Image 1 (cartoon, rainbow, N blue to C red):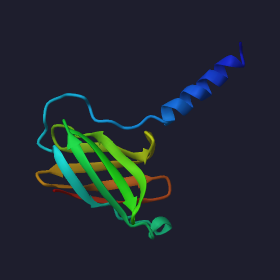
Image 2: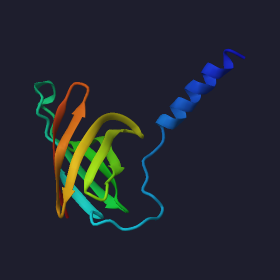
Image 3: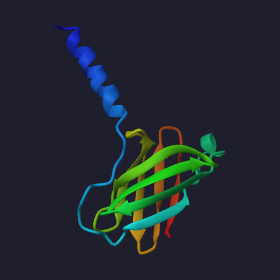
Length: 128
């Protein structure tokens, strides 16, 4: 019995790590709903070569964006935008967080920062 529990825990963790990020099926429209694009340049010398660009959408105040380094998709950015326009988002892959983003949405612009274990940078988004 002692061996079964760790095995189940590992399998559950792996299955959870494969989860995809999805929009809510319903909700109230938010003033931030729409398509967004922008840049996430790094400001750390340890990751200065990254040229990150985000393309995504907000539905019902929930943001999902794909983050590219050049033409290659590297990460996802997701999270709920609070009524005051603040996003405490996640950056990662397959629903697993590797970095966080703190962004403030205001009209057709959004600005903030992102932080990972060995990198950090800024966020500048525009509504399309």
